[in-house]
Length: 76
Image 1: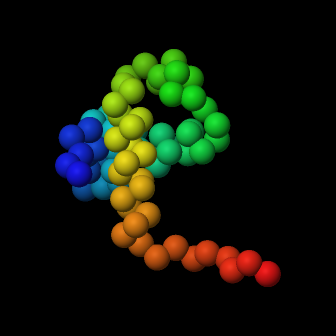
Image 2: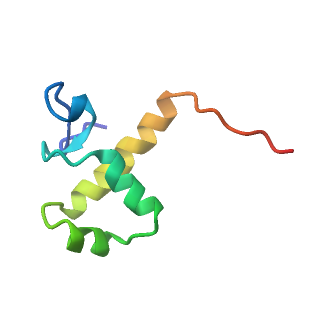
């Protein structure tokens, strides 16, 4: 997948993936979703964001997780 809404720049936000060069980290969008916020709530609180930004942030996060080994706790 090609990401058109996710940008990275070493001189902005330490190079972390952001939404459309807005200095709004992808991780922040994903965290808001994880905290139970709806798309409408996110868009209301952050009017610079667009619905497509949220969707692409989630796709970006899903692919990023596939690329890394994460420490997971084994069931007891």
